[in-house]
Image (tube, rainbow, N blue to C red; front, side, top):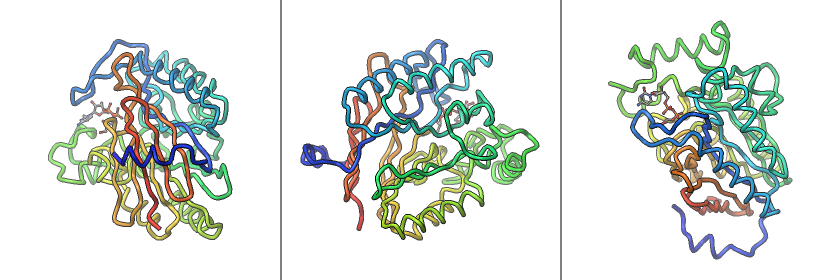
Length: 320
Ligand SMILES: Nc1ccn([C@@H]2O[C@H](COP(=O)(O)OP(=O)(O)OC[C@H](O)CO)[C@@H](O)[C@H]2O)c(=O)n1
């Protein structure tokens, strides 16, 4: 993924800023298991990966903040331990010497509803919304999307977003098991219950943020638990309306990189408009003693992801 030489060549140059990344910790105090497709999952070890990440980020002394790409606690966590487990993982993040920006994933929402989860993750938005942006240096803006805005998980059943999601899912996925992609063809395989969509209001908000970033000559990094490009991800892991989100992004030239989690094996692509998509490898799938986290150096013309162990390093040179 990317060129190791490129990364080495840039060592020693001063980035605009650096930040830490980790995804899909999916901690639970339960024995090791496997995914639906048989990939081993190490539920107790994943928090050790996070601890080593925080230690390394703190030792580096150069990271301005860190980003958690969602799914901090696994859905198999016993429900009477959901709250304490989320608190436990959040406490580990808080050992980091700087701000931590969280986003929500499906597994977070299997454990706690939005009204309980968002305050713990310090996502202080209105009415259960979980999208926001921030600008750590004047030249760069980060946009964090809420991929479960329209979703059948996390909202009360009678919430309009939950009703809209159920209607959509029934239309798009005829299987009685709505997490099953059976008989769905090609990109239709993303219409699964464990995914979600960005709603109309959020799309409008995204458009206004990108308009403002363009006016301010900022380069933008978009972060979302769910991947936004089929080239970087399994079809089954994509945001339901990744195409609508990318249509908004492609109206502007300011978004240079989209980062995501959810598809645990990771991936990298450059789309038709030159936007990089990097899906991060999951902490959950690290066999004991191995790691998957990293830090990103941001330059005017590129992002360099320095991955540890199972997280691949990636050079993402911006398309002008
Ligand atoms: N083909 C599949 C895949 C999964 N399921 C069931 O869906 C639920 C969630 O799956 P899970 O793998 O736990 O979801 P993650 O968010 O950890 O991972 C993301 C995906 O791997 C993206 O590719 C669970 O109940 C599975 O059993 C399914 O029925 N059919």
